[in-house]
Length: 162
Image (cartoon, rainbow, N blue to C red; front, top):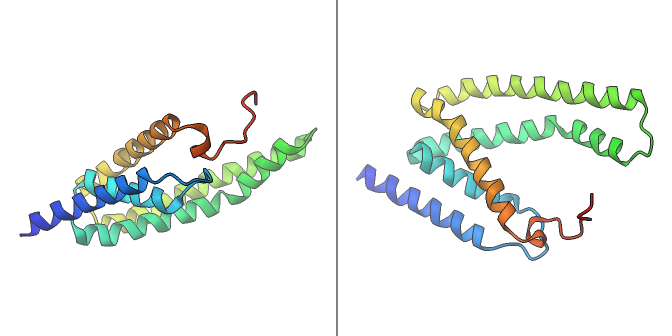
């Protein structure tokens, strides 16, 4: 009975991700909700997560990703500012580099912190496979994004010569 539930859960997550994938946004903007549904379904299916594991692991994973995103906010902002400046000075470059290196350190600390939490939820085998599955999803996501027309990837107004 439990195996049947896992199969049904996996199939429904996969169908939900396919349905979300089929619905491209008309304005071409990134749909974070769709991305998360697809990522979670992929990870749950590829790792063979039980419903209990998925219910505990996926929210932790989302917390980690949100904290990593927040940690990189200032780096992204400074990088954008430096690109918009006509003549950035050495202090601008060094400030941006220092901030971005700090982000790498902060992300490593977060990875360590959440690794300890993940160990309480996943078996060592699933925990080991998780990084490879996450990487594979990212590769497939980028590959599928590249196949979509420019307007559906959020870059419809970009100058191609840049």
